[in-house]
Amino acid sequence: MARIVSFIATALAWLVISFAPAQAKVTISISCSSLGVELELCQEGANEWAKQTGNAVKLVATPPDAQERLALYQQLLAAGSADIDVFQIDVVWPGTLATHFIDLKQYIPAEELKDHFTTLLTNDTVDGKLVAAPFFVDAGLLYYRKDLLDKHGLKPPRDWAELTQTAKAVLDAERSSNGKLQGFVWQGRAYEGLTCNSIEWVASFGGGSIVETDGKISINNPQAAAAITLAKGWIGTISPEGVLNYAEEDARGVFQSGNAVFMRNWPYAWALANAPDSPVKGKVGIALLPQGSGSGARHAAALGGQDLAVSKYSANPKEAADLVRYLTSAEEQKRRAIKGSFNPTRKSLYGDQELLSALPFLKDFEAVLESAVARPSTVTGAKYNRVSSEYVRAVHNTLTGKGTAEENLANLEKALERVSRGGRW
Image (cartoon, rainbow, N blue to C red):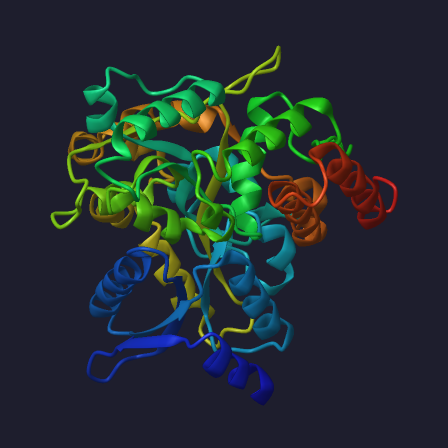
């Protein structure tokens, strides 16, 4: 346990923020992502719950990098640590971490749960147990500089080829006045964010979703190779070489500073791009991610989001579950959506006029969710992290010129056969 605590303190530099009313009943610790304004919003919500209940809360800020956060969680949970009561987890982790979480159906009334999108509840249910509650839902979006497109008489692109052409046209026209301008920024670092970006490219070309729901490994196909090869062509042309080390905040930093025409990112970036001090405030538009080419072409957005789960090692599971119930309530989700553009998981909020006024793109977001492609975490279960790592390696190798897409996808297929033991997940 001492080794784990040392790892937390030195390697990941946790930030702990406490709120403790006088004579608090119990103290509940909750891990929150530090991506964008997530930590601030989590702190505000948890503090309000503490005020209402007389309990205390302790926030633990965890790395924005999903793989680092998962590794940290796995170390803590494997040790049976009670240091964190409530875990903020990615939507692809319930199957991996399920054995360490309590069944929230014991603490959250069924009537309240029914308001969440059914697909999200299904995702969070493992062996009949609701091991997490939906916190917010994500899907990839295309951000664009509507002022620059309007200036040059251009429209948001319908497909990736058109995005490439449009980005080049704006760069050619604007580079003399802004030498830092890039055509398209996205998440190209070798981590889970690249899994999300590239599965969008592949699915938009009709190339499947790595592993299909029946367990078949489908990634080694011409459509997938064409999609990844197209993306390789962006490097050094419409995308900077540095994009291969970009995560979400790196891409947002370039775009929000006014130095990119297009950006692929999650909905959270909307509120930040339109903040009072943002250089691009009022100049940003949002569209569906472009479709690919060929007979299977379609719009495809990676399904993402976050959940809240309660550790079975918690000394206060009832209070921890009550904090989860509060943070995933309609009222709290509405507040988070207006302030931070984190999309609600509750169906009832999608008709809320105040919310639609604050987030105009929300009226079309259900259509985005309809085109969403899920990562194969359900079918691969506890092996998903290995699947994603192998996939990211193959994609990143292609993007950096270490073999062709065809060669890397053929090697990936063989690696996934070994991981699955012949397709038996």
